[in-house]
Each structure stands twice: as C-alpha cells, then as structure tokens.
Amino acid sequence: MKLFDNTEIAFALKSHSQLERAYFLFRMIQNQPLVRIGSAVTNFAIKAHLPIEGLIRSTVFDHFCGGVNEDDCMPIIDNMHNNGNVHSVLDYSVEGKDEEISFDGALEKILKILNFCEEKRSIPFAVFKPTGFGRFALYEKVSAGKSLSEDEQAEWKRVVERYHKVCKAALEKDVPLLIDGEESWMQQSADILIEELMEIYNKDKAIVFNTLQMYRHDRMDYLKALHEKAKVRGFHIGMKVVRGAYMEKERARAKEKGYPSPICANKAVTDENYDKATRYMMENSKMALFVGTHNEDSSYLVMQLAKKYNIKKDDSNLWFGQLFGMSDHISYNLANEGYNVAKYLPFGPVRDVMPYLIRRAEENTSVAGQTSRELNLLKTERKRRKL
Ligand SMILES: Cc1cc2nc3c(=O)[nH]c(=O)nc-3n(C[C@H](O)[C@H](O)[C@H](O)COP(=O)(O)OP(=O)(O)OC[C@H]3O[C@@H](n4cnc5c(N)ncnc54)[C@H](O)[C@@H]3O)c2cc1C
Image 1 (cartoon, rainbow, N blue to C red):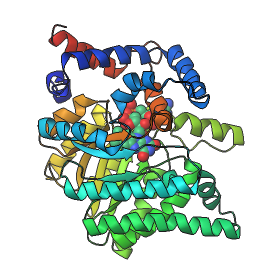
Image 2: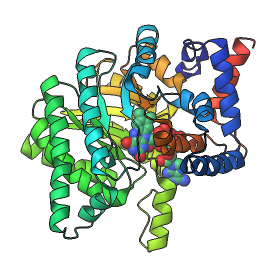
Image 3: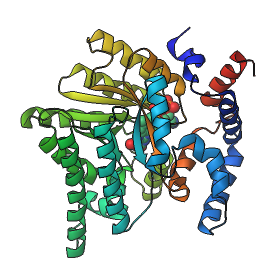
Image 4: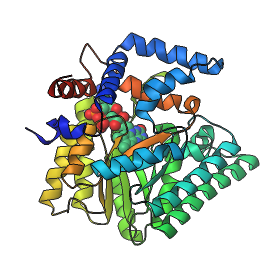
C-alpha cells in the first residue's frame, strides 16, 4: 500500500458521525449544477441579508473553516496537533473588502496571530493576503506602472507600512510569515514589495515567504531571477509553492483583453512546472520551501528529493501544507512519517469567508462525471469502518 492510501491514519481524528457528515457534504458538492446554483443563491441570500448563515455554518463552513474567530479554532488546533502531529496556520479569510478600516483590522489580526505563534508550537506560521492589506485596484495600478495621485501615493505608503509592521513583528518573534499569491494583474506590485522585505528581514533565515503560483508559465524564470538577486544581496528566499487558484479568471481576462494567457497550456505543463520549482528550491541553499499542494505525485516527489539531498524530514526549511477539510490522507500520513505538516485553518464571519468557501466547493465539483478524490477517500474509509 502506498503511503497516502492509508485512510485509517488519514481519518483517525474523525468520529463515525463526522465521517458521515463529510461524505454527505462531498456528495452534495460533487454535483456541478447544484454548486453553480447553490453559489449564486447563497451570494444573493447573503447580500439580501436572508437568514441562511445557520445553514452555511452547519454544512460547508464547519467542514472547511475553524470558526468565526480565533478562539473557536483553538480546540481544533490542539486536537490536530496533539493527536495527529499536524500544525495549523490560522488564516483570517475575510476577502473582498476595500476600506482602510478592514485593512487596519486585518493588520491587528495578523499581529495578534503572531503572538499566538510565539506562544504555541502548534501554530508555526502566520499568513495574510496582499489584498487584506490594501485595495485590489491600487495593487493593480502600481503593477501596471501607472502614476498615482497624491492620495493614492499616501494610500500605497500605508499599505507598505502594514507589511513592514507585520514583518518586523515576525522577525522579533522569530515566526515565519506566509504571504498568499493572488491574480497576476495585481501580483507584480506585491512581488516587488515582498522582494524588498525579504532583503531586509531574511538576512539570517527565511522569515518572509512569498507565493509562487506555478500555473503561471513565467514563474520558473521569476524564481531563478530572484535567486540571482538573493545571492548578490545576501538574503534567504522563503517560498510557498502552489499551483494557483484563479485559473479560470486569469484565462477569461486574458481572452477578454486580448493578451496571451499567463497560465500554462494544460494541466500536465503546470504539473511539470510545479515539480521543477520544488526541485530547484531543494537543490539550492538558503531557500525555505512550503509545499502547498493536495497533489500526491508532487508530494511523493518532494519526499524522494528530501531523501536524495539528505534533508531531514523535520528540517525547519521544509514544510508541507494542505487546506483544512481537504487531503487529510496527505497531511496525516506525512505527519505520521515525521514530516513537518501544517493545515491552513480559515476563520472569519460566515458571510466574509463565502468567496473562499465557493472556491473550495468549485474545486471539489466533479468534472465529466469523475468522482472527486475527497469523496473516493471517504468512501474507502466508510468501507473500511463498515459504515
Ligand atoms: C496550503 C495551501 C496554500 C495555498 N495558497 C494559495 C495561494 O496563496 N494562492 C493561490 O492562488 N492558491 C493557493 N492555494 C491553492 C492552490 O493554488 C490550488 O488551487 C490547489 O491547491 C489545487 O492544486 P493542487 O496542487 O493541490 O492539486 P491538483 O489538483 O493536482 O491541481 C489543480 C490545479 O492545477 C492547475 N490546473 C488545473 N487544470 C489546468 C489546466 N487545464 N491548465 C493549466 N493548469 C491547470 C490549477 O492551478 C488547479 O488549481 C493553496 C493551497 C494550499 C494547499
């Protein structure tokens, strides 16, 4: 039996009734029309302030999120750590806000989470999204090299200050900080800023981590160019390597605006690109790698490479990460083998995490009649438990 086929370890923390609930949920979201209609109706109902939060909570929310605030998440974090040796990354998943007050609120949240990280071994990283700290349209404008009005310049300065505040706190507390990757047409300004931060805060080790979305065909060149800069200027590179979550949006925009799609031609090319990036990072020194994937082959490859390059399973510069509610077969089996594993544990008010939840539902919807892999795993475990 291959390592990730062990569903007993994968679902050891789930009671029979929790397993049945997950099975029911994935059977529902496997249905493509249901997810499409469900997402539209839910968005409408939330905007119209209809009382559907209870329904969302007891279904998708409780499966994919830790709760509405940090306190809700604590028992889950302790359970995963004490009983499965799996760590957590508290992910404040409020999206799509455009006001300064929410950016300052997000900053306060991340600073608070950094305090938890310092106290609890079970929470080794903090994380935030660039658009948690500033307006999407502002990142977009800076990325496009357009000139900013005086007000916008002051606004961008505040964004940069927020980054510095969290990075400074992360360095003082010696807690690595992940920064998520978003849409390509706003990402460049974030990348430039994060490079500057790496140069300042990653002198001795990787504190600041950017994200490489390997569905973008330009990312290997980007990584290599960054490596050259890092060698010259003497800083460590921290990277979370993912495939990327905005493929359809990226392709649609490129088509609409008439520029070449930034996305790899097909899934096989993305897969190859992904594995190239993890290999490159493991072959070179002064690189800290967070392997953010639910892909079994990419995870097996990193395990093989760790062995080949004599990287210890619990080396502080090598982490695997999955999302809470997904791919427990990878997380718990890797942790059981002694690798460093952390689950992203999203939290936030139900209505504010809806974009995140809809992405998860769409990701788990079956394409062309295939059963989603989560559903297959749950089926195997139900059979094993004779439920
Ligand atoms: C811990 C963690 C952190 C994450 N952080 C981020 C983040 O910061 N930013 C972000 O964008 N995403 C992030 N993601 C999501 C991630 O980018 C993927 O959407 C998700 O993990 C699915 O990819 P996979 O590697 O797990 O597996 P797979 O199921 O093997 O790959 C699916 C992915 O392959 C790519 N793909 C699928 N079809 C095609 C095609 N026809 N052509 C080209 N490429 C294709 C897409 O990226 C798709 O999401 C994160 C995921 C995890 C686990």
